[in-house]
Image 1 (tube, helix red, strand yellow):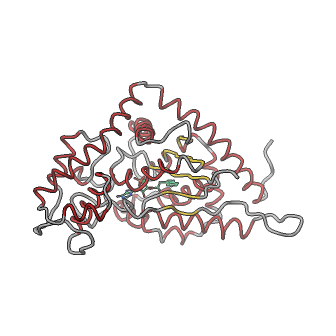
Image 2: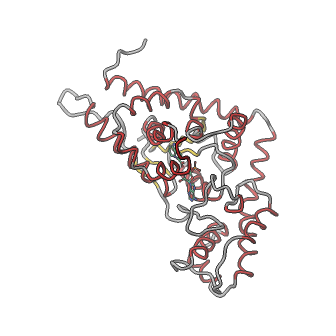
Image 3: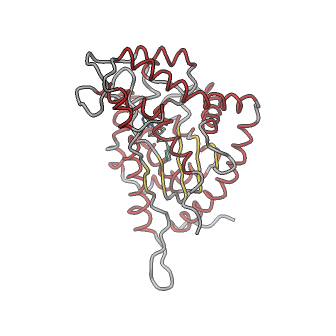
Amino acid sequence: MPRPRVLSGVQPTGALHLGNWLGAIRNWVDLQDSHDTYFCVVDLHAITVPHDPARLAEDTLTTAALYLACGIDPQRATVFVQSHVAAHSELAWLLNCVTPLNWLERMIQFKEKAIKQGDQVSVGLLDYPVLMAADILLYDADLVPVGEDQKQHLELARDIAQQRINARFAPRDAAGESIPVLKVPEPLILKEGARVMSLTDGTAKMSKSDPNEGSRISLLDPPELITKKIKRAKTDPTMGLEFGNPERPEADNLLGLYALLAGKTRDQAAQDCAAMGWGQFKPLLAEAAVEALRPVQQRYEQWRQDSGAVAAVLREGEAKAAAVANETLERVRQALGFLPRS
Ligand code: AMP
Ligand code: TRP
């Protein structure tokens, strides 16, 4: 039996933060032993909003190095850059032509990002989920580990594969049974960490695009900065930390972060901090964050010291990824009736 496939990716837009780590990448690490894993840096997605060409390449390398620093092992996982495998763009085009426009117009993330950009919204931003579907479907992924915010995009990828490709274009075998063209993927959204909220607003998710740097902790923030950001994080006037009180989103978020970063169960963390004031809790949280990120930052420095090391991983990843992706692309081209290429 081949091992089930996993594919996921993060955009190279600035430094990754605790939400990316705890919501997504941390789960990737655990899957490497049991699954055949593909992790890409989705640089084509990064240009769906205005981007700085002087930074794209460097941010792409940084993101890949952070995957490795977080524990992705290039001996076991295939790590690559999305735009290095041309099949992603090509399959996206094929899928574009079978995806109804109104499916894209109802995507929550599109609506949220579009509001911020007024009349400057690109076609690419609308098309973002189709490119993401192509990323996933090219690898016949069984599982896609992502944070909660990507659930709707995963549903869309499933619908495109099932209703728009398989249901319409699957060839039939000798017995008349249809042979699916694309594998229909499942999301993997772990509850803990799936939604890490902003440090300055417990009701908004921690995000790379928040203009306030103080709202997030980047994986490469030095210890003093982490401590400062946590010190300034929003609190409330109530004593004692607790989960699940709708009036206290900040308490819920920071206590959840503490549990994850200190390696405690939620119950244990809730018990330990039930009687603590904010003044006592915050230094504890800061220390847990600094300690949890220390090994990540050390490994990051090691990877970046050897300037060719990350690029070499990406080159090898590209070759492995392209072999799988090109095969799937050819299958889809055939099902859609294209003249085979030589
Ligand atoms: P992005 O930064 O949008 O490229 O997201 C990359 C991955 O991190 C996706 O799987 C997201 O679901 C996840 N992610 C992003 N922000 C958060 C957050 N605040 N909490 C949990 N997961 C997140
Ligand atoms: N849209 C995802 C995000 O912002 C990133 C992404 C692109 C992705 N392609 C993917 C995630 C394929 C999982 C699988 O988080």
